[in-house]
Amino acid sequence: MMKKFNTVLLGATLLLAACGGGKEAKEADTIKIGCTAPLTGPVAIYGVTSSNGSKLAMDEINKNGGILGKQVEFTVLDSKGDPTEAITAYNKLVDSGIVAFIGDAPSKPTLAIAEVAAQDNMPMITPNGTQFNITEAGPNVFRTCFTDPYQGVVLANFAKKNLKAETAAVLVNNSSDYSDGVAKAFLEQAQKVGLKVVAKEGYSDGDKDFRAQLTKILSSAPDVLVVPDYYEQAALITVQAREVGLKSTFIGPDGWDGVAKTLDVTAYGAIENSYFTNHYSLEDQSPKVQNFVKAYKEVYNEEPSSFAALSYDSAYMMKAAIEKAGTTEKQAVIDALKELSYDGVTGHLTFDEKNNPVKDVTVLKIVNGEYTFDSVVKPE
Image (cartoon, rainbow, N blue to C red; front, top):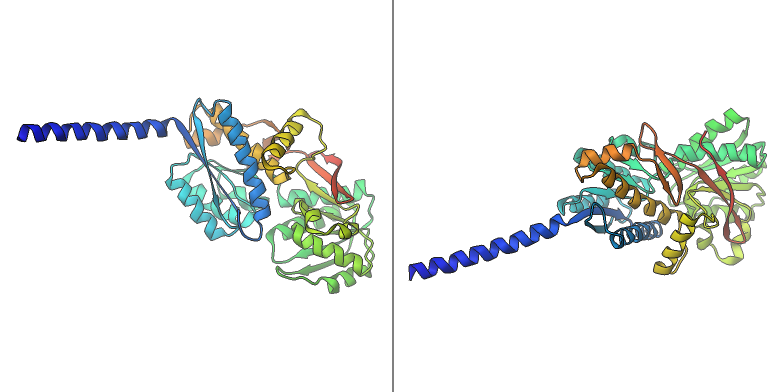
């Protein structure tokens, strides 16, 4: 009787071992990469389109053999645009066994994750976190987008050289590191290039009425008004600026991407002939760009934003780094990212000493509610 029991027990043990071995084999055959993005909340428009871009890339990668011959298990969690939620989501991904991370948007939750990821030495690429100090969290943190100060410099140069502006005003969100970073760099560069700043006004998060500030700016009649904020605020400000009689040309950073969708067609006149910096143009006829646009529209039935393009590139950059390293060992992937030279949808990219991209900036002009290609500004 005891002999029979031992035989049954041995069989059960072998069965459990076989099951365990199968699970380990399955895990060994996949590469886990994690992503967080604000899929809900006030900035979900950025997070949804961003995660769509990276998911499209990962699906393509898996269809074409994966990475190092293994399929990618790509998981996206909702950060809700909140730093605390972002860290919680990131930690869940780490617990699940990810070997690399892509995310987040916008800058505040991205910085929060970067500081934790630095402790983990986790290979991290942020597609959309533009705040300057994000990559200073650690040598493992890289970004695909250009920084806030970089955009401020480009906007000052563009206003002076391309628009031939002599005077400028700035309306800055004093509650936003993003807005403040762009504004400060613009003001410094404006002085260097001889662009006279005749007014600077501020507001806070949650403000809806900007008429008092705009009326003050109106008295100085600037050639250009810089609105360094996201599209929701830019939409409100530009409409109210026209209402008080301001005729300045509006210019802004990449946060403007989406401003036309926020406005009713009847309000398009407020943003007509405005300019903003961005990462690529739908009108770029290069095969790489047009193939991406076509694939994205087929899957999501809409045109891809710059956030989608940046995330798409980020996914392929992580693939390139892991393949260059020949392993998923963290430090090897980080070293490979550092040496990366990548041609993507958003242009050619290399990394500087602080893991920020050295890349071209596309300037878009708004015409009849459409974002039309204006020019490309090369790195100086």
